[in-house]
Amino acid sequence: MPRPAISLVVLLWGLAFLATLGMPWLGGKLASAREPAASPVEELAGMLIQRCVVCHGPDKQEGGYRLDTFGQLLVAGDSNKLPVVPKQPQASELLRRLITSDATERMPAESEPLPAAEVAVVERWIASGAEIDPKLQAVALSSLAKSMRKHQTPEHYPSALPITAITFGSAISENPGNSKDSAASPASVGSDRLPSVWTSGYGEIIHWQLQPTPKLIERLAVAGVQVTDIELSRDGRLMAVASGIPATQGQTQVFRRAAQAWQLVWSADSADVPGDMAFSPEGRRLAIGLSDGTLMLADLGRLIDSASDTTDTAVTNAEITTQLFAPHADAILDLAWSPSGDRLITGSRDRTAKIFKAEGIELIANYDRHERAVGGVAYCGNNPVSFDETGKLRLWSGDDNDRTLAERDNLARFLEPLTSQGERIWLAEGSELRSFTVERKTVHDGQDDAGKTKSKSTTGWSEGLRRVSGHQAWLLSTAAMGDWTVAGNEAGEVILWTKEQTEPTLSFSARP
Image 1 (cartoon, rainbow, N blue to C red):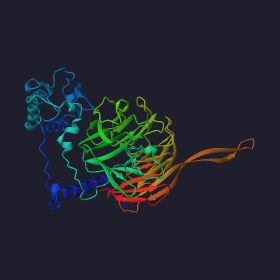
Image 2 (image 1 turned 90 degrees about the vertical axis):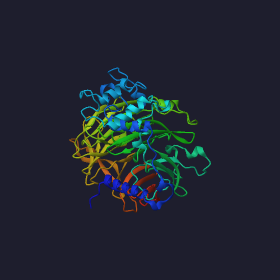
Image 3 (image 1 turned 90 degrees about the horizontal axis):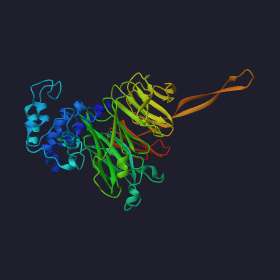
Image 4 (image 1 turned 45 degrees about the horizontal axis):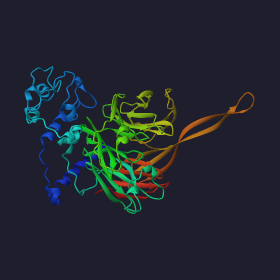
């Protein structure tokens, strides 16, 4: 039976969830809550995101002008004309560009003029003095826009949501009063106790304790309704979340753990929800794959070096160096760092996987032998791996020879990300997890002229542990760490396996 499109499943589930939120029989605050009116700043931010950020945002700056934050909006572009003159709308270049009758100058470019109501939003803000709280000048517009914040996360979910993103969190101390242990790094978790997990929610991510029984311990609101990825740095200090409204707008947010609370420290807007993210092994760089084939590389070193783990010092939008590259002709669906952090592999809908030197994103190899979109990439040891929509899993040489070392076909024929764990690859297939490891053998290859036995090395895929979930719902997200593997399914369940067991250690509904 062919697998239904996951995006459709998630969409239908989300619509059912939203419909339930509106049912009057729920009563209380949830049923009667009304969305407050947008403030002038929220209203303007939403309009700018919808109309302007695509050409004047982090990915592109036409005319040298960028306006994805209010601080940048006030800085002149190549024309050197002030975009905003407080209390003087007619002297402001931003407004002039929106209302001019000259089609070659009017914005948005090559589009119909903006409706009068939207132009009035800009004019009113400028006429009122173009005031903006200094603390908000460097905050991404998507964090301020009503269009990204209009969702109201309910205290209790009327039904479970598909888990589209999952990752292991910090270890949970056996002594709840020991705050140091409860914020420990995932890398330091011992094999004698279960880790915690973060799961996607409705406009939030949710932290779950797993022992002695599953328990909600933390909720963190994010920019968009749908969460597509959650990544925690190896030392547990930084967490990145990708969320948004698919095909409309998205945002990458980075949070830092400070004084036992998560603090938003950096964000970046995009025209769609990012396809995938990954922290480098040392945790100082974040790679972000975008829907237009752009790769963003954020250097978080200054943020880590200047921040304190014991104070709530405001470091929002600290000086973060970002680089943008355009290596693919279509969306980047998955990406991964090499174990040493010196290389980065990307997989795209354009049917290619590419390997770069992380320093400067210098192209090393372009693997273009895929017949369909490349939904999964990873490193298996030091060798790159790719998985495409035809159901083929390939192990590559990793150099510019474009050489395939091993290939396995007849696997799941849909876009699936890969989860790597040393020399092991995990791949979701329906409601089960399959694992593959690289098998290297030395075999006899006849004799030479002197009668001595010749040998040669062969490389192939060996299928290993196959984990069953015990549920009918399809697995949508997976993560692996140490002795554990965890997955989230379309029915909103979390399933955890320990060591080499095929049956789940535990499962529960991740529903607040």
